[in-house]
Length: 344
Image (cartoon, rainbow, N blue to C red; front, side):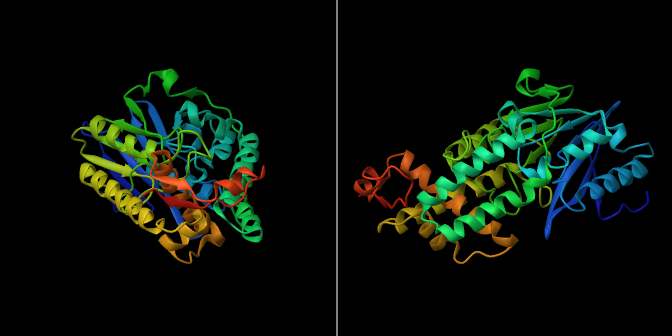
């Protein structure tokens, strides 16, 4: 067999169905994977990349490389289905381009359907919630405005695309593909299984602990949902042979990786409880945890805020924290910085 391009990596399921991993440049200095799976007469694309910059071209080039490797015609026009693991832009942003050039049926979980089919509406509402969250987190007015611009920047290239089917309505199955709802990182996140191979999107990554955001921003996100979903996946996956994620390399030992991720959050929760022996805002907690965060035009600052917020929310929901400045909050009807402290 001829050597495959570095932009393409091939795998197979236990019965020999080919899987091609396509490397896509989602944003500057940030890459993601889409997966093409060939099952009988089905050509199934799992995730699409961001649709930003060169990403759509990377997708088309990757499909052409897969066609060369499989010795059959493969391109946007030959796809039969597009399965989205979750509603984050680096995983679904290529849908408008695909929808324009393909008749492939598009599927996503019900809880993320509005993200791709009513995108403009959701962007407005989530931006408002994010603004209020940052006010409560103690972010300055100037920094808040910058971070809101950063949040919207890459998302303005997308426009709503109709959904053809949703996973729960299909019984969490499409032919041989099975889905497990794993909320937390995203409301409608799913893990997809084909025989002995899992496609985990961002639910499980091999190199980092997937990002968490507070449920106050979007229902069915939040650390509590995420940790439960890890255990649901542990039971559902069984002795899976291969785990393919949306970023970084294959995960050879899924159950060990689940343990590692849970331990990351256990340690972070303990660290936050120590920090909150003295009252802090979420912005101050984020700085204690992650320091001066740079990169991605400020997007990492937003990620750090949301990560800290998800953990503070988790502790507060479980009665381990209280609001230190409650009297001040009570006297004011507009969002303002909230100081949390540990209950002793």
